[in-house]
Image 1 (tube, rainbow, N blue to C red):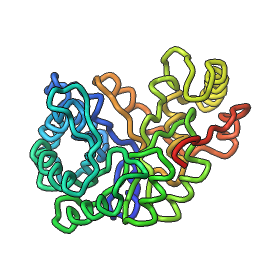
Image 2 (image 1 turned 30 degrees about the vertical axis):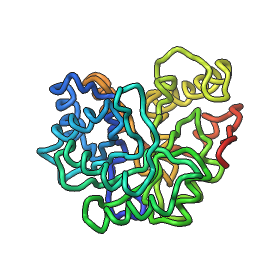
Image 3 (image 1 turned 120 degrees about the horizontal axis):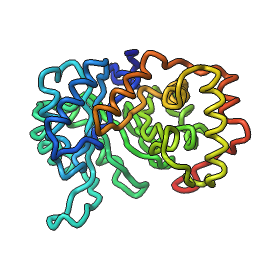
Length: 301
């Protein structure tokens, strides 16, 4: 599988990454088999978070990657603390908390370093300087190799770009959510920061899920885009998944398209696309977006 630069970090990642949130922590053997198979097919980027399944997702991932730990880029996230009663979580974005929280992640992941540590959210009111100090300290200590954000808030992204050495921003990006194309992708590229694209198949809407409204699009608008997609698929002889992922990966700001799978069958279907992924031509992009209005971020600007 093709490898791409992870921003300014010096790390390289596979152009398809595995989003591990969808793995079932109560089925450890299946999770391990999926992760092993993903590695065997060339995936080298694995993303989890301390929030997922109250830490059990990190445990499942950590156990599953032991045999090839140093051959992959392992990413996790920090910033959310589960309440003691398990009723939900609260936002925690202080230097002390981040420095303390990584110890739990390192233990659960069975590793002494995390390749990419990401702030799992963020608001413009957070103590940004303090957060950056925490990540820089962890980097100096060798506990992380790079750090980034997981956020779709333009004002938060711009704040970190102006003050820190982030390597990446994880954001939703797909044919139905192209909001970052207004300015964020260009801004990140200019700063040698990459996009880790999540939600690349729009919850399955771009593949086989029943049509429904999505963001500010009506069901009718979603159906229109799917008809465009099917026209391109018919001409290329590929499939919806391949063309949808190719669209995302044709953006030079994107380092990896992070796809979540929960079964071996889903991974097999993903595997089938990897040989067919290609840069979309300007003509194909025009066909895909013909008659489709652009959406913009309306909040946190």
